[in-house]
Image 1 (cartoon, one colour):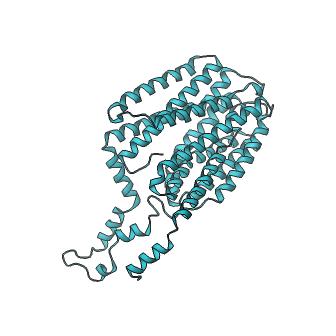
Image 2: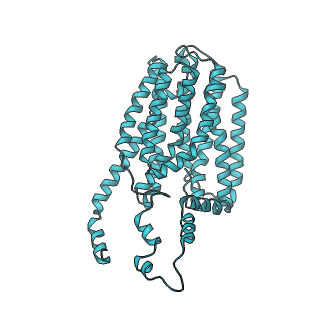
Image 3: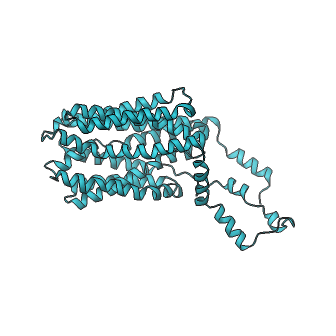
Length: 396
């Protein structure tokens, strides 16, 4: 055993200086944001549905709508919870690498697949990439000091949104101005994804996580000392085998998660925002999944240069970034007005969905989608901050 004085001296001697720590943090921020930006560079993503319905793959609209696209929703539901647990247990980096590999598999199947089964497998891999998004946010918070959480979250979110915007604009320019085919656009996307996978391999793996990999200091504080084990207190006898097993179960991560869930369900504000998150996100992702099919129905064209899906995605991303940023500066008593704000925004979204359904004008469809996505992203940071104030869990 190392005496406490020596332990303190050793800890002080190993702490880096302020200048070195600041320089290391800046390098880490730059690399993480650059990785987050490059991971979103998929210029062919906005044109997957026209690509599947076009001459290259020649799938029917019924096959894409009823046999291929629904696989994404069901497979995402299956892999979401296991991916959340694996993310914490494996300490984030392996899940990010898995996400990169899954993206590569998605585009390889898009380019080389020829059957409905291949496209269904492609949707399975795409669901893995969606479920693995939680690893990026959790990874960031595990590497920096809690005092830097807010700044790091803003940097990383800006990098991701900028990557999506740049990717959509690049894809639209290549299709409309460069007259690039959808197949070539997918090869460009594959090249970007291979590069981002290489970046993921160089990410630093954290030493701690939320549930499985707690720090040694926390474990030492929670465990009894060796002296207490050798000389137990007569008023507190050493527990038997059954007592130790019950104590181990009580301190397990699953039981702690269930206790957190029970305590969180008793908080009205957290319950309100959680219900909004679940139901509104379900509707949001259904619209995102199927809106490209709707656009193809409203205006079906064989001229790829007249497909403006990338421009619509770019505009919706830009508006989402603006609304998300502006929401952070709104000074409203959310405990009092949250229900009214949620009802108002949800009513606007419902009207926009009805407009998507009823109109036959493609530009109105584009505009409705842009506004719908911006309205959803406006409430996301508010839900995140409100939930964080109610519980120690971070809603991702």
